[in-house]
Image (cartoon, rainbow over all chains, first blue to last red; front, top):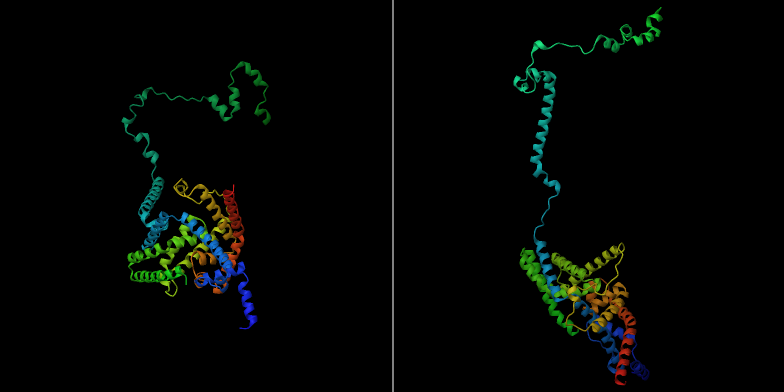
Length: 210
Length: 225
């Protein structure tokens, strides 16, 4: 080794490591899964101290992170979680239970539907038969009061004697003429003397005919 | 190789053996035995899974669901598991994918919802809130503040840097494993890790320095009144 090389290596070993170099040493150690090693670290106590400080800082971060998780994930919680996992695994192996879609339940209610259909058909047939029968049979006559049993009216009316009944016309000839517009007939039959004068003034239909 | 990783190797072998046994039981239709063996894997990886999910989701209820989903999904797809990769790596990949899906869904949902103001106890159950024989309220407050700062700093990291940092530092994964988990190149993993710690140092170190100087001044005051 030349004198220059010796001087360079001596200068390199005496120069303190920067934070980045310390980080690099730590990264290599962690990434490779081995303990940190650097020629300068074994030679310089100050850098060794700084490296120890650096690793302590990172270890504190790790400890804090672990403590935080331990606080959240208690032993009871982990036990409950494990039970839950095993329950889910057990459920995973059980054949899936198929919940029938509403459409699939139709056969279960079809008998009653068939019954309903029969009822509807019978009602329609009954209606048709009723209408057809109504065309041929006069039910009013069939159920007229004459055909009713006599006993059913006994309580309603007193016995009527045919000899005492006199047919009376409620509408007289005057009113009939008035109703049917026969004014001439009506005029002739005016009996009230107070109205006769007025009647005389009134022109008649026959006057116009002439 | 660090001590932790040396210890992890037999555990990984045991995991692979258990996973293979579960696979064989599943193939034979012996589901009860498969479940029983799988419960061992669940017990071994549950806490770690919760930790990873928590750092992604930061919501205990969602973490619960994400971890459950990941275990159920891993069990039902165990036939696709190959022994070349450790079970831990394979499972973690399922978990991370699930967490990322949840984050996406949450972002979509939050676009339509107005956030409620968050209370300091929002993330804890009532039972956890009642007084107990734990650390003093002052300690609790300080540690909560420190965690809050850490969470804020981590949240400021880009997604990939955060994932790489968490997997490497918290879970002790090598760059090769992180590469398998995230699908990133090994050298990219190293770069992300380096940038993540440099940024974290920038974000957290000033406050740490202030705290340490503050405590030193306090001690000085106590020593020399």
